[in-house]
Length: 139
Image 1: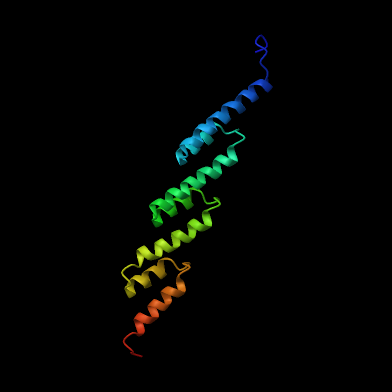
Image 2 (image 1 turned 135 degrees about the horizontal axis):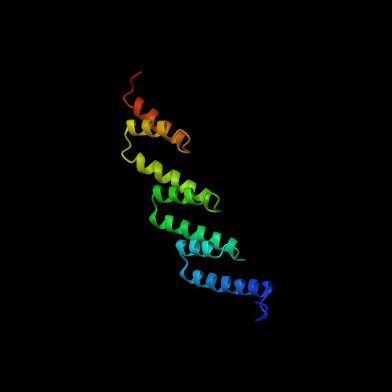
């Protein structure tokens, strides 16, 4: 390296240029897998924080496009610290509730509440259970 006048500062500068070019290339594709690959292949890149943010945003938008509780659950499991995690949790809770109680039967509401006691829809479910059990007017 001494023969070619290459030192550690030169190598670090070259690595930064490579990281920058790779990051710009990944931004044009704008896919979750692209950002994952970038983060794996360029762990010291100055753009690491931005790549994580963009990866999380792309993954969230993919879940929004799919719009199922499973898609949001997968997002939450992969990126629990993402900025959009609270919004993803709300969407997950709503879609799970709607999917598992869509038949509106008493047994369905009771089972859902038993399996998901922490649901934010607890009051709504309890009201449905109350209405269905007292509908006949019996004591």
